[in-house]
Length: 120
Image 1 (cartoon, rainbow, N blue to C red):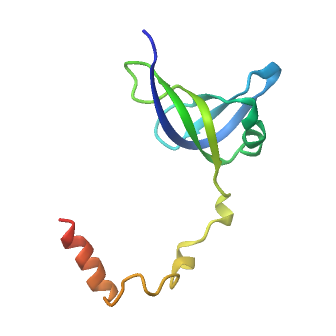
Image 2: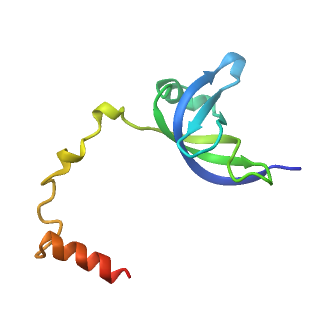
Image 3: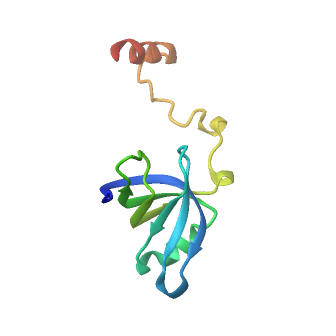
C-alpha cells in the first residue's frame, strides 16, 4: 500500500552517505530499537551531512512509514542538527553547583519533596 507520511524528528548516528550523481542519501542508525532509516536530503544540506558522518545527529523532515510498521523506513530531510562529540559534553560532576539558586529558599530535600508530591 501507499506510505503513510508524517512530520517528525529522529536521533541517531549517520554512518553512510551517498552523493553519487545527486543521490544525496545517508543511513541513520537510530538510538531507538529499529533498523536504519534512509534519509534523502537536499543539496543545501550537503556540507552539514558530510560533517555529520559518524556523529550523533537529530534529523527533522517528512517520515515515510509502512502502514504495518511503527518505525519510519525513510525521511525526506529538512534539517540536520549535529550533536557535540561525547568527549566534549560535560560530565555529571561538572553540573555540581552550576545554579545554586535553583531551589529558591527551599533545601534540596524540600524542593524534591514538593516536586514529587505536587505532581501526584
